[in-house]
Length: 276
Ligand SMILES: NC(=O)c1ccc[n+]([C@@H]2O[C@H](COP(=O)([O-])OP(=O)(O)OC[C@H]3O[C@@H](n4cnc5c(N)ncnc54)[C@H](OP(=O)(O)O)[C@@H]3O)[C@@H](O)[C@H]2O)c1
Image 1: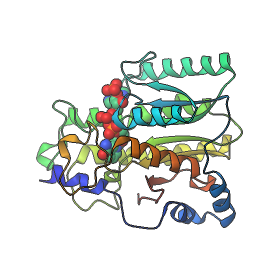
Image 2 (image 1 turned 60 degrees about the horizontal axis):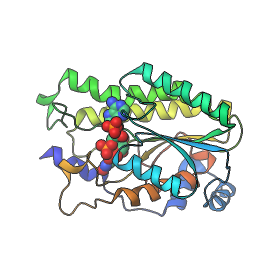
Image 3 (image 1 turned 60 degrees about the vertical axis):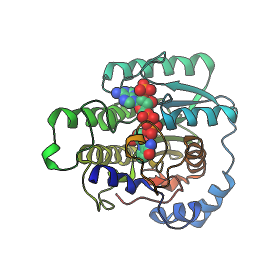
Image 4 (image 1 turned 45 degrees about the vertical axis):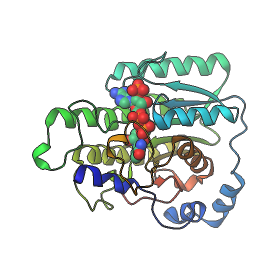
């Protein structure tokens, strides 16, 4: 069944190790590679704030836990938190931005890490399509609203809150199945297309972000196949499904070690570039 097989594309790829692969991205020079090696430890800015949207989900809550465990101040947001964000409700994204701006001002903090760990694969009648006969306008609109348009509005309202100087990272959880170049199985039209749209938003925003702060990164990340509510219905024996805590450690390692030249790219949880 295509619906199940499609998740296979989310399995970790074979390939070079994380840093070697990162350096290969758009010809990142050796000096940047050396700098990235030196950045293995997380930023030590004790006035930093990390914001995790989808911080209530399987991967998102593991990211929040891992960030807090290493002493970072984290604001975790979901649809039932305070503030609450529904990515299909633009006004809630604006309210979040106002809340974050106020908190940064009140506490004298800098938003150094923004992670969008929310996403939708299935929800009620919205299910991955096994063939074109399943394409449905409402389901497609829902997938695009949550996976692409919502994150784009997060870019509009939250990227301007990143500091104008110094390293900061905006990471958007995408999916390998959103890769057009890697699509050999077909199916999952709406999820694939909405993640491909997200990737284009990420790449475009990275270009604009670089004009504000050359040390800022905006990237799309594939977390691998992770044991969460999102993947549960499609888990398959033989597929390497990893616990969220491990995925979070890997993603943070990638976020911590990405060199500046990596901004605008699409990477997996090993730091290996994923084809568009
Ligand atoms: N798990 C995998 O194998 C896998 C593979 C490839 C890519 N990914 C990507 O990784 C990300 C995290 O996935 P996950 O596995 O952690 O999924 P998950 O456990 O189902 O969590 C999904 C998160 O998205 C949030 N969300 C869903 N609809 C939303 C909406 N309308 N507005 C705001 N937030 C919404 C949920 O918030 P609430 O708590 O408020 O419901 C939750 O925090 C997603 O982008 C997913 O596409 C996952």
